[in-house]
Amino acid sequence: MTVLEVRNLQKSFGSIRAVQDISFSIEAGEVFTIIGPNGAGKTTTLEMIEGLVPPDQGEIHFGEWNWEQDAVAIKKKIGVQPQSSAMFDLLTPEENLNLFATFYDKARSTEEILELVNLTDHRKNQVKKLSGGQRQRLAIGLAMISDPEIIFLDEPTTGLDPQARRNIWDIILELKKLGKTTILTTHYMEEAEKLSDRVCIVDQGLIVTLDTPSALIEKLTEEREVRLSFLDGEEAAEAADLFSKSLDSVARTERECTALKLWTARPEDTLYDLFKFTKDREYQVEQVSIREMSLEDVFIAFTGKEWRD
Ligand code: ATP
Image (tube, rainbow, N blue to C red):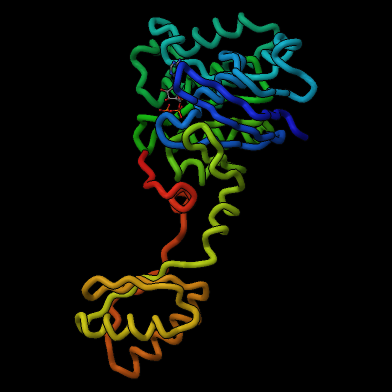
């Protein structure tokens, strides 16, 4: 079931075209990640969907509902992770959750939320004494207090250390188990790959590509990168390079000193032929690896740009 559909969203700030043309639809229960470099338009897209920023053009539908006619109903259906500044620093996580709960007719129990975001042990500590990761977990808890169906998390892990990021991942996976739909933005490819059912890569206010992480990667994996290095110096690498170029399965090669990289659609065939060749010549292969493709490669392939967190 489609729970959200956006069509041709556009937003400019003066001469800056923050969002040029974004369309997608989201199914119930999925983790949908919008990923892109700084300034790609992720936050602006989310803020338009959340009803915080009016689009210049385009449509936003939550099923039959839209912001013009059904704002009250939509607000009950969605949960938005508040900025850290919206929390009360002198209150405890428990008190913040209790206070936010009073804003809604229906609220999940504070106990349950503290458990979900793993803050039960810190329930009585003032928010100002919490770590960055604990504050972010509380922010997710606050987004959950009204028991919404759709949760928006804008860069929930930015600036956190790897362990704190993983703790947030666990919560997002837990939300999925609860049947919630999560719309997430991130700079981190690894995060998008691990958590998402589908990933929407944006750059300069446009969708670069949108699909499941594995489908995006598969689009690139027709060719795999194989790396070899030789113990017998450059001569062996050069000979292997020449031999590789003569193979049908090899699309191209690159050589640097004793290291050889080659791109092949059939790694097994290529390696079989190549090892036969090196054995005949008695060259010693020091290392061989087939590189795993990642979403980072997808971004580079689609935009021609290097990825920077
Ligand atoms: P980041 O990862 O850095 O948060 P983002 O992908 O979320 O980036 P946005 O915050 O949506 O990108 O910004 C897109 C572009 O719009 C940027 O060039 C930004 O400077 C600009 N922008 C965003 N909000 C405003 C605003 N209120 N006024 C003027 N320009 C804005």
